[in-house]
Image (cartoon, rainbow, N blue to C red; front, side, top):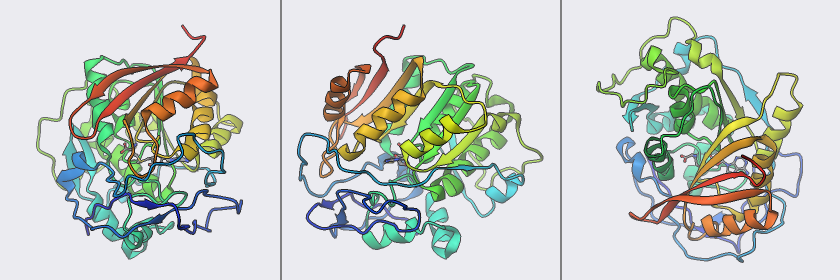
Length: 353
Ligand code: SAM
């Protein structure tokens, strides 16, 4: 089954948050409920047009709320030994020179029981690409991901020997580009464990297996051959995959997990994040996570719509928030004017070189 749902948030109604992973009952505030909107089909080819459509233009208060955000415990996902199992029953496509798993097929298997969190069925029944605190949109590829990929080439962003975090990764294409660009290590984080298991990990594995030695070589030329719908078989764990780690959970939880882990952790040289500032309720935790995890001379590259109609977030509100916190300096390095206006923002610590 393939679908594209709209954001359409009616703040007067409460959405009941997922009870499975929560330990704090004052979660998810405000709670949202999806307004009924038309349900449209999303073909695998339409990923590049997967912008969130917000049916109503109800704007929130212009001040990001201090209400409690949603809690989801953090977890590290091990890379299964049998890589072929990860790609079993998956169908592969390519976009922007990268392999990705067809999400419609994943959704079908998830509806058949492969989705411990039940986010596909919840997304279907609430007709939404986003259920705050339950499902944060990571199954599909959002258009600002492609803006950021284009920006990497235009600005000649260097990933060689860098430590990189793809924060709110969804499909993980940004991290995969960094991996291909020669990053020393790439960590992927998504709110939902289903997204990591069913989308991010398979996408990463598909690129590592199919691209072989090119991954990690710094060679960012586009894939020239048409993809085989069935991924190649993996004989062993490609070296490049050993550079990756995968995490699910809410940002502050993941940050705590990383900082308190027994495994050695060095702060990231580069944090990449696309379409993660739609909800002003998350600004505080997002800001603090960036501040905790970025190396003192590191850079954040953030891609976003200028305004998320109906949810209230957007680049100006986030920038204002960051300026008030006085920790980072920000600069809008690119504006994309086609369709909904979008932009790329670079962030660095105020006292960095
Ligand atoms: N970056 C992907 C893209 O551009 O295709 C996915 C964008 S999706 C709209 C937003 C992502 O942000 C989700 O995949 C989710 O993992 C992450 N996210 C949003 N709020 C979060 C929160 N409070 N804690 C952890 N992750 C969050």
